[in-house]
Amino acid sequence: MRKRKTSHQPNFKAARVVVLGQDGVGKSALIVRFLTRRFITEYDQTLESTWRHHMEVDNDFIYVDLMDTAGENSEVKLNNCLTRGDIFLVLYSITDRSSFHEAARIGRHIRRRKTNGNSVMIILIGTKRDLEHFREVDETEGSDLSQELECPFYEISVASSDGYKEVSEMLSGSVRQYLRHEKIGSNDKRNQPSSLSKMKEGLIKKTGSFRRKSVTF
Image (cartoon, rainbow, N blue to C red; front, side):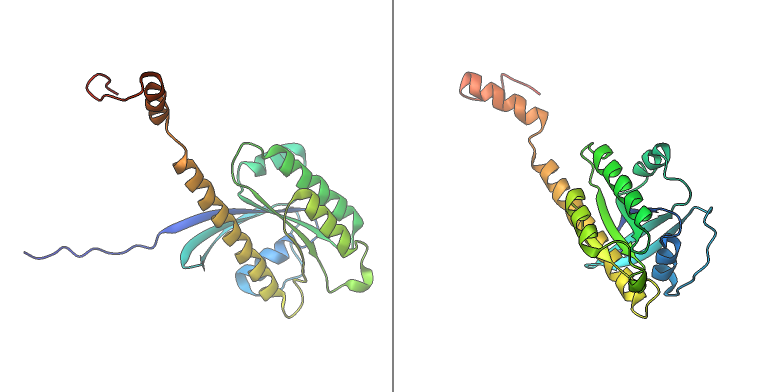
């Protein structure tokens, strides 16, 4: 008897990444640098787009949806983004203090609203590190804010020769950390006793034993 051949399809996992921040901080530049390795300086600041990218992290095949946002970060918009993301990259420019204040507002909003038990990651990113001579936001301020938000913090330069490496390592590390957190959360849920188990435990405590013939579930 001939055995049927089985094809082994890779088991894809998913991560949804939303890139947030004030216009002009480099959101589109960061995404394009990651997807194409190129650095492009001019973008349409009114355009919102989503790209799907496949990557491998720790021998797992991952598809990552990258959502680029634009325009005013209103409460309605942020709440909509919360329903569409797992990982939130919150960007500010180290050369623009107002963008730092905006990043703080966005990060606090996400941390305050995302309290429904779902896994969520915030990554705080200071961009344009290559423009050190125009710096308005000290690195320690970014570090302090990340401690308040309980999230990782990076300062990067998308424009530098190492820009692709910095962005790629940051995104890969963020996805890896998110998936590990998801795995721990799934294991915790599996280890929780079911309602049926709790009913049985209650009967055992009441009667001192559990007899299958007398009680049927």
